[in-house]
Amino acid sequence: MPENTRYGFPIEAWELAKEQANALLIERARERRTITYAEICRSVDAVSLKPRSWAIMGFLNEICTEADAKHGIMLASLVVRADTGMPGNGYFRNAANLGRDVADREAYWRSEVERIYEVFADEG
Image 1 (cartoon, rainbow, N blue to C red):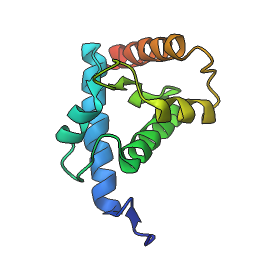
Image 2 (cartoon, one colour; image 1 turned 90 degrees about the horizontal axis):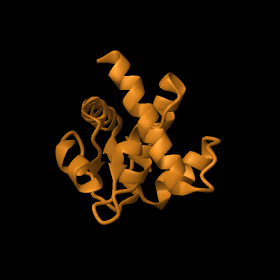
Image 3 (tube, helix red, strand yellow; image 1 turned 90 degrees about the vertical axis):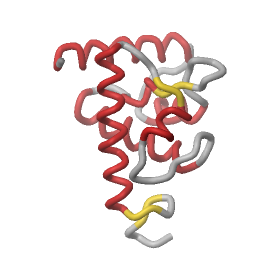
């Protein structure tokens, strides 16, 4: 894959898409709401993402890693599956890679969502 792309998308478009997604996720955090994978894929128009793709997993992992460095939270915790209301397996793998204890997945996720709501309530 060429160095100037991410998952086949030009870097500039990928970064713009992350800005779009971050703005949407921050808005959802302030509203104390989640968003489904399909909704975020439809809402981000700088690149064409699809739920259940490697690209969306990589995309959300980058958002989480960047938010973790800036705020100590995994912002993409707000992105959930429509059928379960929780994130998919890739989210928990990334959380573990970032040093989170995900032994009790649901408890970890619920705690992280509350932390996100608190961070952005303070900024609102």
